[in-house]
Image (cartoon, rainbow, N blue to C red; front, side):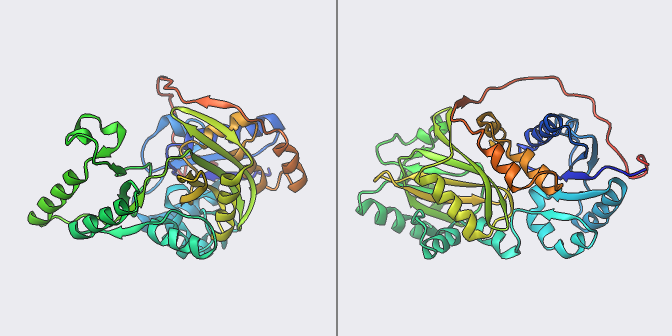
Length: 360
């Protein structure tokens, strides 16, 4: 009996469930036959229940290759989406592809991950490539932070600080002298902090022999911010949908200066897979690059409401089920609509976790 080909989505970020649902949607709508696998390092039934077969990934990276080999052989896996461990699996590319499997990590070289992960280096490289990018200053000590604040304020710019490495905007603060001293404590959701509070905390940390992780200082950008989700193959953008953010409302776009800047960034990086590029307009209303994430964004699931199922397109192309012409036909279905995220509470589903000796 010939086993159907399988596509495997390994542990991802918060959107893994949405990705699996949208791949299933593409399979149902097209009447395709293939197996959908999912895995995670933790028991996450709300995610894993979306797949035909689910596995718990080994926590130890040293056990990962043997695990991948066994699952691929068991299920006739022809394509793997690496998810969170893209950088690690990129280093295993030769061994994984030797199994006859297509590997998608987000890039094609380990150095690309290092570049995208370091916001300072990313900004410098994109500027060298001729792409508008936010000007940033790398800092760590209280003295460096104070100097950077003075430099930006002397130009009439509002300083911001955030970690060199990080996701979801964690650690981002706008340093504003007009806010109250306890603004960061009483209203943390506004992301405003008085510069003197930051500098005082840093000096106290130094006295306590605590080190601040590398940070970048940058000017505040009024926006709007856009998050562009893309399907890219070896630097070639196959499909993309931008989300323009205004508070809790997001509007889908597939054109404009910010959209084109994001596509150019993906091309320059030689990205490969489902990725995301963030831009924000400066005080002249011009978009500049903020960062590139060599993985799907947390909001990629929203983009399906535009008529473009990026996750489904990824799976179908990896499995060789649609060509460029058929892809273009699907892209013509794009529509610009507004969406708002809601919290939809549901009970956890029951999911049977597969083991390598449980599936014949």
